[in-house]
Structures are given as C-alpha cells and as structure tokens.
Image (cartoon, rainbow, N blue to C red; front, side):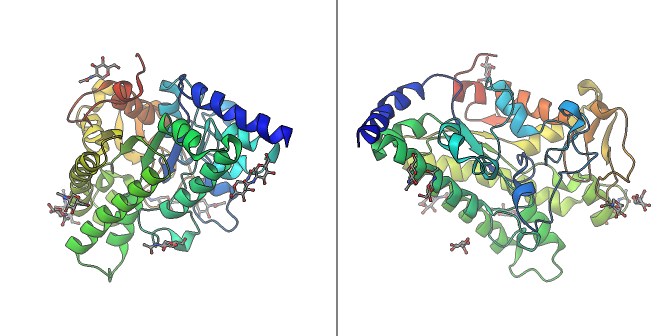
Length: 355
Ligand SMILES: *[C@@H]1O[C@H](CO)[C@@H](O)[C@H](O)[C@H]1NC(C)=O
Ligand SMILES: *[C@@H]1O[C@H](CO)[C@@H](O)[C@H](O)[C@H]1NC(C)=O
Ligand SMILES: *[C@@H]1O[C@H](CO)[C@@H](O)[C@H](O)[C@H]1NC(C)=O
Ligand SMILES: *[C@@H]1O[C@H](CO)[C@@H](O)[C@H](O)[C@H]1NC(C)=O
Ligand SMILES: *[C@@H]1O[C@H](CO)[C@@H](O)[C@H](O)[C@H]1NC(C)=O
Ligand SMILES: *[C@@H]1O[C@H](CO)[C@@H](O)[C@H](O)[C@H]1NC(C)=O
Ligand SMILES: *[C@@H]1O[C@H](CO)[C@@H](O)[C@H](O)[C@H]1NC(C)=O
Ligand SMILES: *[C@@H]1O[C@H](CO)[C@@H](O)[C@H](O)[C@H]1NC(C)=O
Ligand SMILES: *[C@@H]1O[C@H](CO)[C@@H](O)[C@H](O)[C@H]1NC(C)=O
C-alpha cells in the first residue's frame, strides 16, 4: 500500500518533468518510420532485418529499418535532441523491468507495409494504424497505472509529440488491385475519413501535439517507374493520388483543429518537399533520383543484389524507400522550412526547438 501511494505521488513529478525538452515521442505509420517493429511480428512478410539494409548504420547492423542507415523517424528525433527514434513498442514489451520507465519517453509503433485502412498490408501480417493506436491505448493505461490519475496522464501526454506518416501503401494496393472494391472518388474519401477517425481516436487518448507527414511522390519511386509505367517515367495516377492526399489532409486538419481548440499541429507536405529535392537534385548533392541504390525497381534489396557505393548521392535506397541522406534532408525541411512545404507552422515552432 505504501509503495502504491509513493508511486502515485510520483505522478505529480512525472507531469512536471514532462515539460522539459526533449518531449516524449510516440510514432505511428509505415516503413518510412518503422525502426524494427516488423522484426518482432511472427510471420511478417514486410521486413528489413537483413543486410544490405543498415549498411551505414552503427556497425553496419540491419535493424529492421528500410534504409541504408537512419530513417526519417530517427532524423526527426535527432533534431529534437534525441540520439535516434524511440525503440519499437514491441521491443520495449520484452523487458517488463524497464517498460514503464521507457514508455514515458516514447515508443515507435510504426509498421512497414501498413496503411490507414485495416485491409492494407494484411496479407503481409503487418500492424494497421488502427492496431498501432490500440497498442498506444494500452501504453496510456500503463502510464495511468503509474500516475493513478487520468488527469495526470492527460497532462503528461499533452506535452508529448505524436508523429505520423502513412497512406502510401493504401494507394499502392489500390492501384495494384485489378478490381478495386471502390471507385476512385469513394476510395479517396474513405482514406481521408478513416484518417480523421484515427486522429480523433488519438486525440481522445490524450494526444495534443501532432506532426504529420503526407504521402511523398510515390509515382516516382523506382518501383512505380519499373512496374507501373515500365519506361522509367513517373506514374501519373499515383502522383495525382499523392498530391490530392496532401491537399485533403490540409483541409482535414484545418477542420479538425477548429473543432477541438486545444491541438497544435504541423503538416509536412512530403509530396512538395520531395518533388522540390527531385527538381533541384544537384543543389542537394544528388546524382540519381530515379534508381534504387540497392536492388532495382522490380526487386527488393538483399544480400544477393548489388548496391551503390555513393549512397549519399541517391534519393532512393531501395525500390520504395529514401536513403539516410534523403531522410536527413526531409527532416531538416520539416524543422526549418515554411509554407507551403510545412504548415501552418514548422516543427521547430511546434516543438519550441532552436535550430
Ligand atoms: C479494424 O480492425 C480492428 C481489429 O483489429 C477492428 O476492431 C476495427 O473495427 C476495424 N475497423 C474497421 C474500420 O473496419
Ligand atoms: C500496474 O503496474 C504494475 C507494476 O508496477 C503491474 O504489476 C500491473 O500489472 C499493472 N497493472 C495494469 C492494469 O497495467
Ligand atoms: C500495460 O497495460 C496493459 C493493459 O492494461 C496490461 O495488460 C499490461 O500488463 C500493462 N503492462 C505493464 C508493464 O504495466
Ligand atoms: C511512359 O509510359 C506511360 C504509360 O505507361 C505513358 O503515359 C508515357 O507517355 C510514357 N512516357 C514516355 C517518355 O515514353
Ligand atoms: C480526390 O478527391 C479530391 C476532392 O476531395 C479531388 O479533388 C481529387 O481529384 C480526387 N482525386 C482523385 C485521384 O480522384
Ligand atoms: C468538417 O468537419 C465536420 C464534422 O466532422 C464535417 O461535418 C464537415 O463536413 C467537415 N468539413 C470539411 C470541409 O471537411
Ligand atoms: C533487377 O534485379 C534482378 C535481380 O537482381 C535482375 O534479374 C533484373 O534483371 C533487374 N532488372 C533490371 C531492369 O535491371
Ligand atoms: C534476393 O533478391 C533476389 C532478387 O530479387 C532474389 O532472387 C533472392 O531470392 C533474394 N534472396 C533472398 C535471400 O531473399
Ligand atoms: C521555421 O523554423 C525556423 C527555426 O528553425 C524559424 O527560424 C523560422 O522562422 C521558421 N519558419 C517559418 C516560416 O516560420
């Protein structure tokens, strides 16, 4: 009993401590932010825990990141003052003795191959955004178990940063499906209304500060150039979807934030930012913005494929994912740029960091 009271008293300190930077970071989404979640899912078919992934990571270690090194979750965490992304939630679960302390600093729920819609990525056994948010709701209850009060938990979470990047896989699966179950406008609308539902759920669970990355120019990935067009041009229907998605997200968040007055957010238009990098590639040190460094457009990266030596000069690491260098530039943009690349404020303003 005495122990319980002592640990509940701790809640007061926890909610004060949560104000000091860097904030706790909770990360949701797909392979752009996955730092190893999928390596912990039995039977998962969307994995990156093998070489040459991670070739530029500390000790050239494959960590489950779909990258040659650090990914966008890490690069954003670094600009917040952390060493890299918080570990996967599924990893933290493995050690009950440190779990409670760790989740106060954040957790990464992102799962490569997942989508806004439950059905996306299901065949590969990945964790949908809906289920990632369910995992977060247990984290909330674990925090409340420490603070003994929903109010103290609310205070702690109101200072945490919620980073989300998702949507590409929904669009890819829709375009790859020869008989899509919905018309284009229906699909378009479903994607946005489902995303809105997820953001509302996070809000109800205590999230107040959001950083959201839209869908990048997925029609220009090595995969789309090889598989959809086959002549190395960008695939326009995928580009249109991605571009519309960014516009629709801006409307959604504008609308949502006018209904609930106590959220702060920053929407990074990844479509525009990446298009900007592609349009002026030499200025950013890129020599190749169309090909995969490892593997090619049709085949994924693994130890029996070839890979480029000048990784920092490639935008794409593999058929879908940016290199460590491209992720770094994306992170610098969301922290330091202005509208229309990031709106209504940049991540530095949102999070009160000086760059
Ligand atoms: C998505 O899946 C979860 C189970 O994981 C279920 O509870 C939920 O109702 C589903 N949502 C939709 C929109 O189908
Ligand atoms: C609350 O935390 C204790 C450890 O501090 C743990 O044993 C217990 O299972 C937790 N209960 C819930 C409902 O999370
Ligand atoms: C976290 O919360 C869940 C759901 O309430 C519970 O099952 C689990 O035991 C908790 N874990 C810890 C370490 O408290
Ligand atoms: C490439 O193929 C697409 C259709 O697959 C076509 O619309 C486009 O004009 C082609 N581009 C070139 C440069 O051939
Ligand atoms: C998606 O919906 C928006 C309006 O909500 C529309 O402007 C856009 O053209 C649609 N995109 C596609 C690919 O149909
Ligand atoms: C704004 O949100 C409300 C309530 O969810 C909805 O009825 C309305 O259609 C939305 N407006 C736009 C422009 O999305
Ligand atoms: C892509 O890589 C595979 C496997 O290494 C190879 O068989 C194929 O020819 C390559 N495709 C192109 C277009 O280079
Ligand atoms: C590696 O990729 C090549 C080309 O895509 C494929 O043929 C081979 O089976 C893969 N090897 C492993 C170990 O996955
Ligand atoms: C974005 O962030 C930087 C600090 O990193 C700040 O100086 C700048 O004013 C911000 N840009 C805009 C347009 O608000």
